[in-house]
Length: 116
Image 1: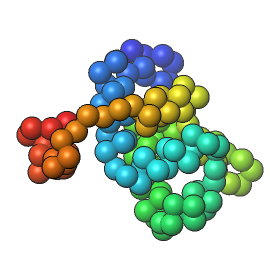
Image 2: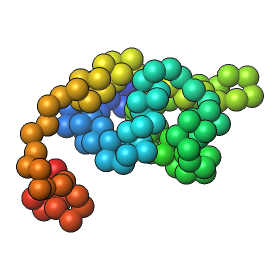
Image 3: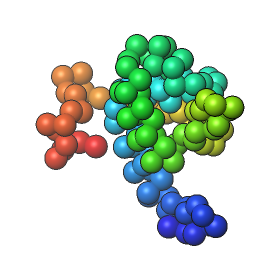
Image 4: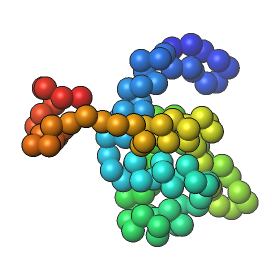
């Protein structure tokens, strides 16, 4: 890690680990894809994803902790957006990548010793 004022720059490996942790959950994946389109307020995000605000808050906290989203005060409300516009491009690249998998295999938690 490299110190930069109040912020710390993560190493290349740590960036990938944080991205992986964020993408490990389908709701967080959907949330990142929604924020890729445009910044949004929590109430709008919860409604769009069909989840409770409490559940959304937990996922947003994870994404903030991973450094992928930021909370922007807008008057008395808070809007969320991707921390860096390049994350949207990275998400586009990831979601359009060809992933070669065996049709009878799934990368699940039970497979962690052999998988991701």
